[in-house]
Image (cartoon, rainbow, N blue to C red):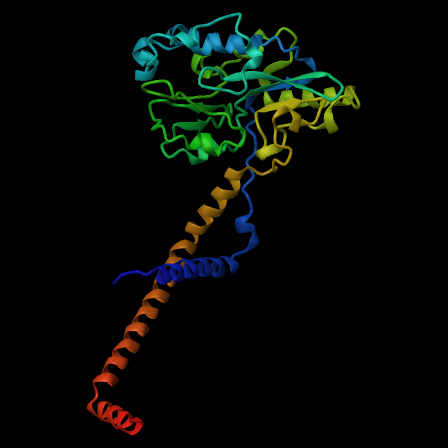
Length: 350
């Protein structure tokens, strides 16, 4: 039996109606987002924009540690027999000419993260010609969208330290993480024959797991604009700075405390965060929390299968009635008496 466009639309509408009807009988709490608590041992970074001088030492240090000298760091941290294929070969035997480290590079001209940079510094000049800097890298969200959409668990969030880590051996290059990330952080190595996703992992893959000595960027910062530590301690520090400096920071907001469900990287700024590349409309519940809870609920209570079943039954029943009416019409047309009556009418009309 062929499915016409009308029948397909009937099926779609029927499924949506059935799902809505079934969902309406469930308690409202079922669809509430499941708020995740931060691990007490979660580590993170705290960036105070008012302390940043735009020297970009953090960018250069990160670039050297995680790209130029990556293999030597891996060899020092991981025994050769424990290194996986990616770590042994790194798939980048030689740097491309455009990737060679150049201290004279005009770093501030870098417009966004790409496959060479795990963090960047950008600047904003306000109407009074005051310069403000902002550091962008992976936010290590408490409930990250990149982890939620990855079909092969190449991206994972450590339940203890909270770092969103990446396993190149699992990655299939679908780039769903790029699309899903609300901060536009993961980048793809388009120029590589065997590309990977590039993002900040708080130097976990180079300085080692359970790192307490800081990251490349935090260790390089000369003014303490970005510091490393446990998130709970960093949050206390941010709140204390707000308390000690009334009116200094924009609306006394610690960006990352609640945005997108909360992040392990937090910020203070003297200007509106929208000028620094952040979405001021960011919800306090992550997209991943909302979508996962809804989808899991639908399948847990059988809403989707029931809705599809009802839709199929509706379409099948409609097709049966349609064919039945068609058969009745054919029987009526083939009846001899009906034919005689038609001939009489035709004669009478003539």
